[in-house]
Image 1 (cartoon, rainbow, N blue to C red):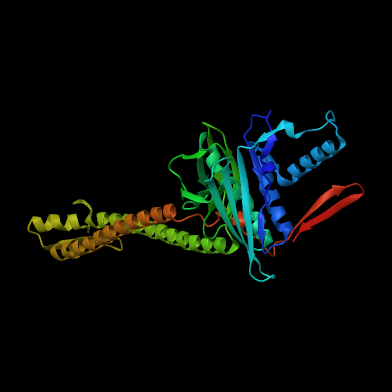
Image 2: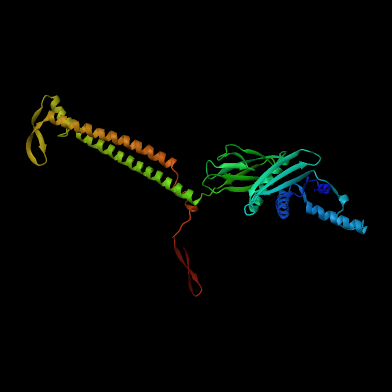
Length: 378
């Protein structure tokens, strides 16, 4: 049973008083209940926002007071019940243990009440498998329990992460995903910030927010080895495609330049022998054949079929023009594709620092008195 004397605290201290009462325990050793209530009191004391006392502390004070009364000592040094006054708030708890002894399950209900009120201000339920997990869940549950007492003083939090799309939780309540586009209003005081994403180690940290201030938090998520390996394989494929597109663009540009140069050479001008423009000049003058063709291997004029040669050269020019246009299209497609793949695809070495390297041997020699020292890493 709980004693009403647990609601006493020193009146001289203006800080709100808060008493942590003994927890009711069902099916669990009393030591677990005592450890749980002690951990709750420790977390509340660490906040430095309340005057916290526990049932054990109160029992010690009452024991001293009883000894003073038995001794009839009114002027003895030490505290007395006359120096105590009522707490403003109290925390109660009920711990239930179920399941087999090898795999116990714990259910803890924490309740915050204002003295003199029959309705609780807040309550938090904790479910855990095993004692270790239970004790891990008590601190964040304690922060959540007293959150309502801090709502009068407001601050805000800005959260960024090294990863996009990571879930952001404040006091186990999700407030969005990274990158958060706005400040998150929170009560002044400590809060539990959790950032998590599939394939990455969860980050949990306590953030203390001051009234009317902005707490700017950046969280770097560390990928799991499997996730880092999968990411690098995927990024490497994107990078290979990007370089392939770059090669296609370069080849297309070369085809465009080559096709354009050759087509222009074959088209020529009326003064250059054996070009399309030269043969067309004769055809336009009504001369379809004559002895005006020369070669580098003969000084004797050769017969020329100006119309036939002009037709053949026109076909060749159109072919090279087609090649040049196809090359230009390929160059444009390659450039666009490479740009998109380089921008969209991530760097394959992004998580290189997080990957565990095996089979790497490094050796070094360090000068030392009388010789050298050989050191190595394997």
